[in-house]
Image (cartoon, rainbow, N blue to C red; front, side, top):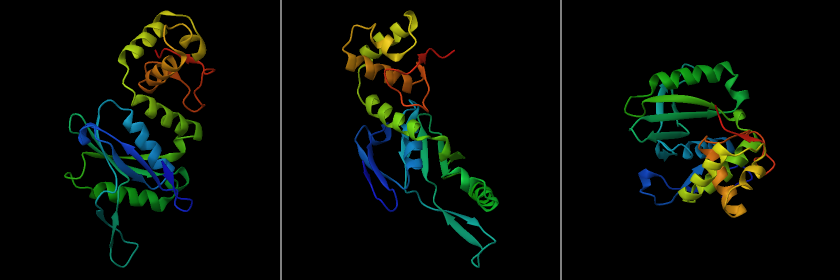
Length: 209
């Protein structure tokens, strides 16, 4: 991952079913866009991720041309073919009446050929700890070890524990493999943890209801 001090531009390599598992480089204009992408990559239903998309032209009464072009930050395509465009902004910007007016104009002008729906994502929902957790979860999710995952999942459903350290200490795996499997299960929502706090061996974990 690389970053520019001026624009905080981030580059990372992802592989998805749409790339046939071949890693490709993606560029993101902010930490917020990158975090949204990492979270999307954890969705098992994701088929493809796109950035640097073509513009959507929308009417805009506040300039002489009477229109503006908008570039959506991301487009997600799911396994069933459903496409979702993603508009990413921080909370301060989203409080602006002008930005709200812009969002309404963009979304109403988006053609069906571009996406099936569009959503707004507030980057302030991604704390620093949450972003760090997403990076780690994405990293371990690229390690394919279903047998390890099953062992930890079975232990999570049958053993007593409060901290993650207590759970991984009860499985017949090396500490590193047990930790990675547990983090993959947290990423998939099979094990619960507070994602807004750094997830480590001292984290409280549980089985979601």
